[in-house]
Image 1 (spheres, rainbow, N blue to C red):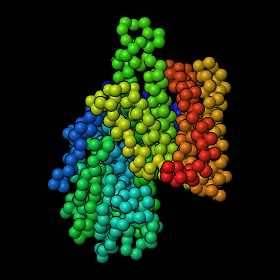
Image 2: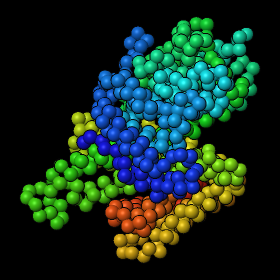
Image 3: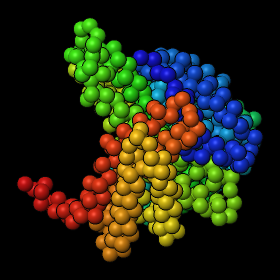
Image 4: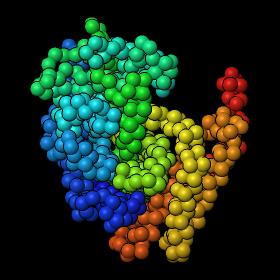
Length: 591
């Protein structure tokens, strides 16, 4: 089935669930209007459906290839990328002074969802360019910004993020790539980087690498890492391209999924060293790179939403056409569509409900970033901390449900889902990387319990859960039969999250290992509960407005509350009672 962007679901979530409508009314987003938002979302959705999605399959069966140092992307991708840039999509949220449109992060996230639903392998490249733009704009010198940002903002040049090395995955303190100072103020970079997405390709004339490396006199560990801009081609004073820098793609990884996306082994300094330019200050590179990584974590979260949406649409179309057995109440001739069988209905509803909850989390994170950008003083602190709290939830939960929804899609297809020609398997293969890259989901959980919960002495998470509890109370106050137990179930889930968070606060100072042992189930608990709050908020808003889609939104929130939130009680129990057993895992593994 061709992908169709869920424009109305997206707009409803923006306006009635995560706060865009209120922000527009309050004039927090400049001249942006609801009509302009709709126009952008509709056009981005059209482009995703008509131009990106048709190349999903070709990107899978015709992977990126390396020959004689040249990487060739799948058929049609160069033309697609050209049209994408000409449409101004790369510049959507870019800084205005360098040719960007300066639109809110929220709109960039929305557009990224639709493009990733169309083809995650294609969209992951522009995602990194957008992150590189943000890092360079925040930390680069005026000269670097003037030279590189205009063409990176437009998409004429792409950007990458070079962190990982063979011996240094999540532990960046183990990096060995080195940088040597030069008399002219530049640096020479030497070393190898792995897992570099779009490190080499044929879409643009130049590729701008942001590379972490260590100076000879740098302190040990992460305190001694610097960030360098290393272009594929050096740029002359007049802006033209000069000599090829001393870097190359030494190989392409053969991957489970995302076949169209070139994942490169990059070698720097096979000769005299690759010319690099310092971004920010020496030995402060990790702070600069985190600007890009935080952007990337939200964008990876939206990849999870995107692949879940695409997998659901694919499975729903198949289930409506495939006929097997006779569903209860079926009065038609012959076999009924499998979409009418109760268990298939349950799986389809699970896909859709999880997708809606994760979408709300990601959009809420983007909204908080936009509010922080527009605010000052205490309000800025509030929104910055809100975004920091939600980021690990958005990244980890959304990518986990992307895998879950894609796996359910295969199950709905039955045996045909295991056959590549149906296309169901590609969603699972593509989705599986998202819980791993840009900080594994285990790292997101550690970040949540060690850095985010303690913010403002715990006030940040308390206020957040309190707001969602108010939504649960509103849902309960409606007191209509079609709302079922939405209010009660969401309130219970939020209480479970609060109780577990209090346990985390109490336990962390005396037993940090216990907290880390159950950080991942705690993150899922928080995410599930927050998702229930957002869906309850949407059901209430639709009902109060008398919208035509109110019954459907109520039914979705009720399914989530009554079928999925029951997991939160078990998760809270796991968090607070099972951490000791993790200490016995070594014994269990020895059996």
